[in-house]
Length: 152
Image 1 (cartoon, rainbow, N blue to C red):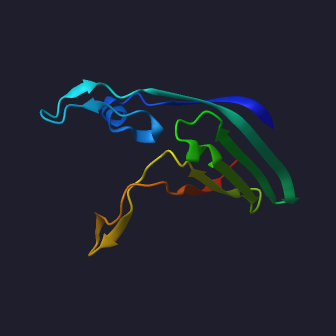
Image 2: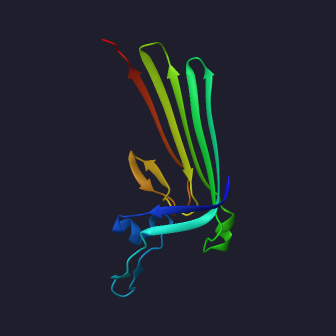
Image 3: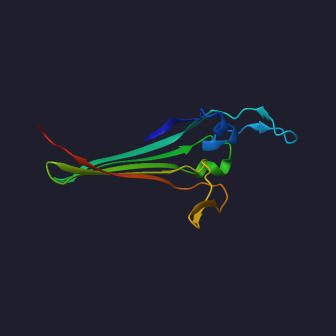
């Protein structure tokens, strides 16, 4: 646990920075012409508390788990209500050894950051359609792999 910790968000894509993606300050746009008066910020720096919990364990002789759970809270958020929000970043990796030649891996990564606004989508008639407003959402990435090992 670190009661005094820094967190930096870097957005190098100008289009995303101008939109205010990932919580950076968006561009200032002239209401009449639609022209950009001031580019969006590409860096967002935060100061707050960080808690990291790491679990590495052999569940049995064929299964290993490595899980990292990270909580972050920004002390200096411009929006006072957001100062109570926690950013959550949780990665879990499960390794399975089936036999000496075959192994599998399951990886799950979940992120929830109140500052990252994501539209709500639904699949309607086989097409992805925006159905809701932009807002904080749980982001999930997962992958499953099978490996084959041969010795010559």
